[in-house]
Length: 121
Image 1 (cartoon, rainbow, N blue to C red):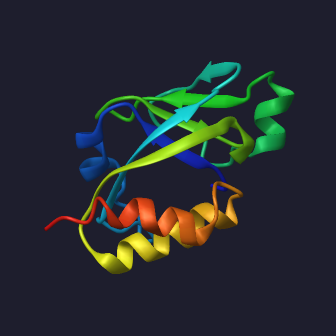
Image 2 (cartoon, rainbow, N blue to C red):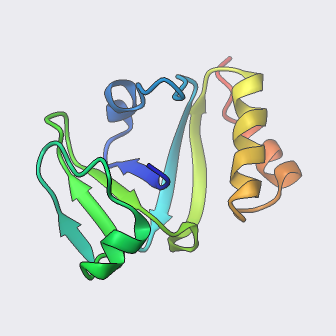
C-alpha cells in the first residue's frame, strides 16, 4: 500500500522489490526513525493504512514474509537521509532522484548528482 518499504540487508532488495511496479536498479541506505513499531504476521495486512496503523499505536509495521524483515513506514518525514549504494543505470538514477524530491527528500538536481556517483560502470 501507500508507504515506504525498507529491508535490513541490501541483498534482500533482489527478493523483496518484485512487485509489478518495482524495478531492479537501485539500492539505498536510509536512516529512518521508525518510531513505534508493531509486528505483524508473515502475510501482513494488505488493507493496512497509515490511519489504521496509527489507531493501533504504530508508526511503522514490521513483518517477515520469510526472506527477512521488512519495515513499512507511513510517514516520509521519518526518513532522515538516503544514501545511494548502487544503481544499474542512468535512467534508474534519474527516476529515483525525482521520486526522492517528490517525497521532500533533497531536490532532484542534488539527488541526481549523488546518485550518478553510484552508477555501475
